[in-house]
Amino acid sequence: MKNYKEIIAENLAWAKEIFAKIDSKMSSVTIRSRNKVADGVDENGFHVEKERTWWCNGFWGGLNLLLYNYTKNENYLLTAESNEKLMDEGLVQIDTIHHDVGFMWYLLSGAHYALTGDKASRTRALFAATTLSSRYVIPDNHDLGFIKAWNGRGAYNWSIVDCLMNLPLLYWASEELDDDRFKRIAMSHADMSIRDHLRDDGSIAHIVEHSRETGELVKTYGGQGYAEGTSWSRGQAWGLYGFTISYIHTGEERYLNAAKKVANYFIANCCDDWLPRVDFRAPSEPVLYDATAGACAACGLIELAKRLPENEGGMYIHAAVNILKAMTEKFTDFDPANDHMLGYGTVRYPAESVLTGDPGVHISIIYGDYFYTEAILKLLGSEFFTW
Image 1 (spheres, helix red, strand yellow):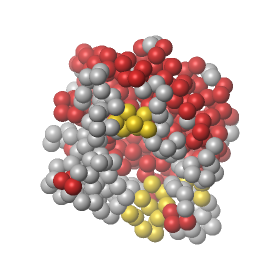
Image 2: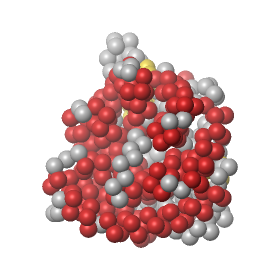
Image 3: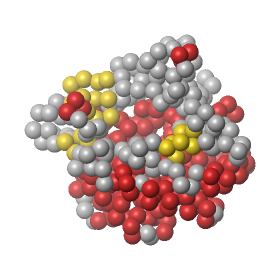
Image 4: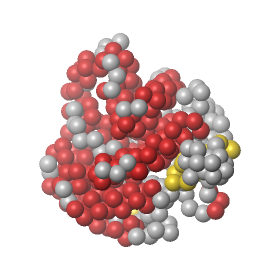
């Protein structure tokens, strides 16, 4: 197999071609959706919104910041700034905010601050980091703690693998404030996730219930996958990219090894056609895809490949490119007349047959567009790392 640099070089022209299509489409969409906190799309293909505390709300502004950084088109920055101000309404809803504040404000306010030095954006991101750190649960015996995922007594001792992708907010806050308490919480949660979410074969448990006394695993739940004990592909992607990110911020080899373990499992389970199914252990029929898992995994694979010897990294960049090319061929829409770009995202494995018309199956989801664009920009050599 070719090494990392060889694979990047031979796919550069393709990545440039695809980004030109992304930019052509999004330069229209950004103006049309400037005053929305965009999520998915309606039946006509135009962006819709949800409540201000919806966990996906940072991705639209974050996507525009990715595009602004690379193109310097001011329209993208204007949309991101509009998105950020609209999100202020959610920032103060302390009783309904959850662990996904990294998705919501680090990709948005953190990235805005990194690009422009805007002090209000810095304040928003630091407030979100403090909120996230307050969700840290310390077991009675002071062993590894965890960040509580959701609110409510029923989920008091639950963590989910998704939270690995919110930890960058804490790593950043420690660096920004020269205060290691945020980083310590992030690393404790990441270590817990290696112990309790990561299975021996490299698959991931989505939801873990912990003992309040010891912090150890009591029970796992299927969450958004097919069933308990199966392998929800976006959870795999969260783990792959999330462990890689913790390695980038800490240099601790255990996170790199965990990322490789998850990556190897992901690659082995989607390499037949490089189109990730919703759950790698679900029944073969009906065939249900989740393009958001592929886009996020591709980002993680590229970052993982960068941090390995060139020959070893070749395997991971090879997989990332194949996933992106397969999804581009099957799942993308670059028509500027509508707002959806990467299709075939799936929120969760449907409880009933897809024939019932489950609205969360094979749809456009904003974080699919975000990770797809991020991955293409990585292939182009963009060093703007928003995690």
